[in-house]
Length: 304
Image (cartoon, helix red, strand yellow):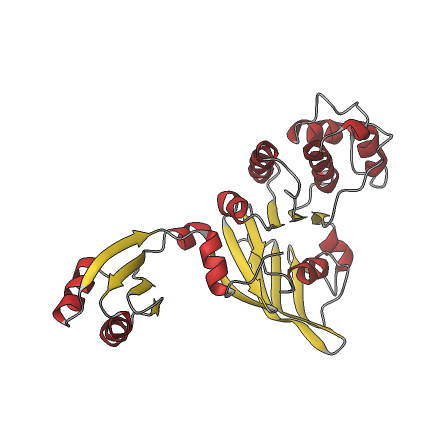
């Protein structure tokens, strides 16, 4: 079995005797784009800062490519590239000059690698221009070039599409997919734009109040067989379905019921309800969206 690129094992963080992170577990696999979502104050940024070594966990283990951040910090960090806030660069210098200056801190980075990375991020036509003339999208691309120039196995991006227009977001999304394929890396990305996470990520973890409350493949989340019933008595129906099939549903009001039926046959369920004296006005199948799941799990909390 391949070694995970990132592992968080029962990680906790206390700040001034207040437990911010409450024993979370996260695994990011090879060649995976992993989304990390959380409402304001949930602990998302604190978690990212622990992963990149800016703060230390109070307990638990963080491993990067098998190396413990606590016991093998240098080896672990060699496998990470990150943009936690806005990428830093010198505006009066060209994009290439910024990359040359950055790479001078690592003798293993060759000019060939710099040319290669410029092409990958799509800056070949503007790399000799001053950064002051770059759009926000171009600055993000240059920031990613800096982050991956040493060929890390894990790229961490915190809110990378902030301020980008729809065209820039689409281009950025395609760039991330290209990086996974061409650079053989994994990406951990946090974002407040749920539709973007939905379109680019393989799996997603949702954190709320310092705990991971849901981790799953995006395709599993989106294609749960969610059903909405309009009934004569939703409370009675909910009780009957739980007693008959251990099927958990949510009563919206006296007339409306919703639930995920997975492998259950909807026709059989409807016949069962009618047989037990519950009239059905209509039934609607509905695929989930990541936003709906997020709001349901976090009880309507706003995202960061």
